[in-house]
Length: 398
Ligand code: ATP
Ligand code: MG
Image (tube, rainbow, N blue to C red; front, side, top):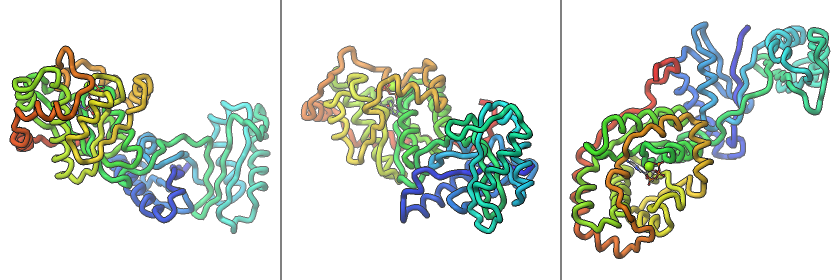
């Protein structure tokens, strides 16, 4: 039986004139994400995107799994394609949905007929298919208000499609329609969730990671790569840029008051990140900060951090509780990696009593002991680039 995936677009449909760009970006994203899974035709017609396997080898199960993680899709259904003929439609429904029909106690049939040349009306089709299914599956009864299963029939230009309840898509808007931003990524729980949250709003990502060897290990950096691989299942490909941060941290430690270490370090992160962002076409920075979570996440500390950069800084988790962030990290598959115990450059020199309400001019005065520009330039000379999300087989070993 020939199968197809039918995709319903999310907020896209609301976007008026932008709709075409949104739709073409989504089509491009779907095509790219399906690469490596065999030959598929991906086309759009009548407010639906069709994903049609072209050969026996096209892996529809894997395609379905990937489609569930593409932003801009509100729901999708795996459907069987029947001839545009009433008998063929009813038999397809009985056979294709066998497992769901056996599992259900109640059902109803809903028909959409966008091909107005088809000789039966939607209610006539629903009635015919419903009667046939009742006959084939005598344990079933019809419930039009709250059925366990809705059998959906869509008579479209390219054929008749039969499917059960659609699956929820990832929502959001297609990555690439919301500009490009740099996510400051650590190995923690929060920043991968922040990355995912902004990708959901259509933002294409570049990742920036500060490493402080030998205080932080190669394995800590590999952990970040694995986290980003998970995020990239939703956000698509990205580049990770590793910034050597040891010398800057050692200089701050040697020359600035201990209680200002964290805030000055964060300001250096922003300065370096801003330069990298501008070089890579990013229009904003993203962090995983959440108000009040740690000393550097008070309003005063955030104000001091922001003053070091001129790009907008998005903090999508600012109002989230830890429990909410953890729930999202479970959902997107980053939690188990995040809790692996590797050191982060932010934690290696943490002062005992960080200043929780730093005052900008005092911080600026303390920083005068450092040659900020030279330090930033030095670390920008030694960036390391890693491609994320390019190997996309689902059966690869993790
Ligand atoms: P996370 O769970 O993301 O590590 P956190 O609650 O531990 O966040 P901090 O460690 O203070 O908070 O870091 C705050 C934010 O600063 C992080 O969410 C991340 O965006 C950024 N950040 C921290 N460490 C690094 C790093 N090594 N490289 C890049 N960005 C970092
Ligand atoms: Mg952290």
